[in-house]
Image (cartoon, rainbow, N blue to C red; front, side):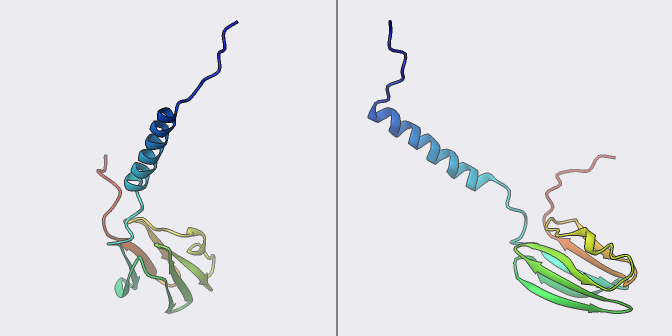
Amino acid sequence: MKDLRLHFLKGDILAIAAVVVLAVGLLIFFVPKGDTAGGAVQVYQDGKLLREFPLNTDESFEINGDYHNTLEIRNGKVAITHSDCPGGDCLSSGWIGTAGRSIVCLPNRVEIRIVGKSDVDFVVG
C-alpha cells in the first residue's frame, strides 16, 4: 500500500510562510479603516454650527438647550451618551463613524453630522 501522507520540504514551508506574510500585509494595507484621518464631527443646534471636532480625537462636549445632551468622540466614532430629552431616540442611534451619517435629537433641536470622504461611490435613484 502507498504512503498517502504529505511530506513538506524546507522550501515548501518557506514558500507557504511567504504567502501568508504577503496575504496579511495586503489585508492590513487594503482593509478600509473608515475616514477618521480627514473626518470631522459637526454639532448643530437650531440649524447653526456650534462646534466642529476632528473625528480622530477623544473628546466630550455638553450641549445645552431645552434639554441636555452629552456628546462623546472616541476611537473615530461619535455618540450621544447622555440625554434628558423625552423619548431618548438620540441615545438609541449608538456610535457612528462614517461620513454622511448623523444623530438627531429633535426635542433639543440638535444634529450631529460626520463630514469627510464618504464610503459611498454613487447613489442610485
